[in-house]
Length: 258
Ligand code: CO8
Image (cartoon, rainbow, N blue to C red; front, side, top):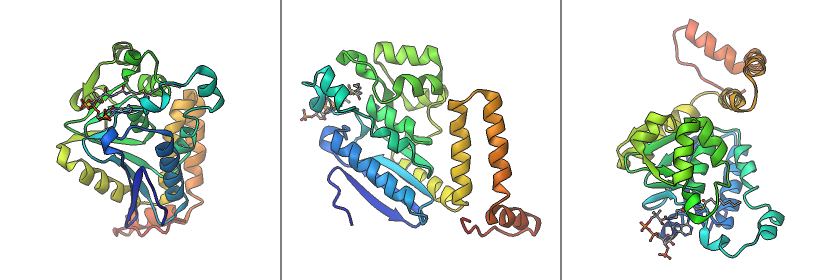
């Protein structure tokens, strides 16, 4: 059992639950938290007993951003040489589906972390934004790119240039958030969604995640060709035989993750 300092990690059946655990700092993402979160997510990703991961925040925030106190005195060379935030690339390399369960603030790096997840389920108290402009910086963990892709240039510019926050309803309307539920139900909703995903075939859910993500990285035609190749590849799995046979035989499938 790893002795985590800034997060907690639980396994509940086929779901891995990671809780950001610096509530006194509104779960601000310092370097230690980034390292622990990336390590925990990578561990869960390597565990074939885990079919989905949920990330949430302890206390009243998901995460209020990168840790400002840790960065305030750094100069350009320190930020560049240490390649701040490059660890997040390992997080986005995780192939197991990840759900962000967001209550309260998801600001700056917190919003960017939520956007690195595959599904965002928001409590009605959630507040999303990229307030870096008010600190004299700009988003540094992918926010200018992922927010723009998620909600379009006009809305992303509005948020990034003013630093204003949007509530859960606006975030859902804008397409950032998959679902909004009462704040006290957000973790249950995320866990049951993760359990649903975890009950399906792990290699196939990984492939589905990979092809959806390709929509952000490729032109339409090559994305469609990639999807077709991966679709064909699903026919090399036992789970395709099981899933389609179960439908034809009018029974529930028993996926073997093979
Ligand atoms: N970093 C460090 N500490 C924080 C952060 C943060 N991002 N956010 C909150 N805290 C701390 C506060 O300092 C306070 O600690 P203390 O009690 O020791 O003073 C504690 O958390 C509670 O916060 P508040 O008292 O401020 O709580 P409020 O409920 O009054 O306000 C807010 C909540 C509105 C969320 C407020 O805390 C806030 O504005 N936080 C900062 C939000 C922000 O600007 N986030 C963006 C950070 S920068 C970033 O994420 C990306 C950086 C990209 C840089 C690119 C470099 C390559």
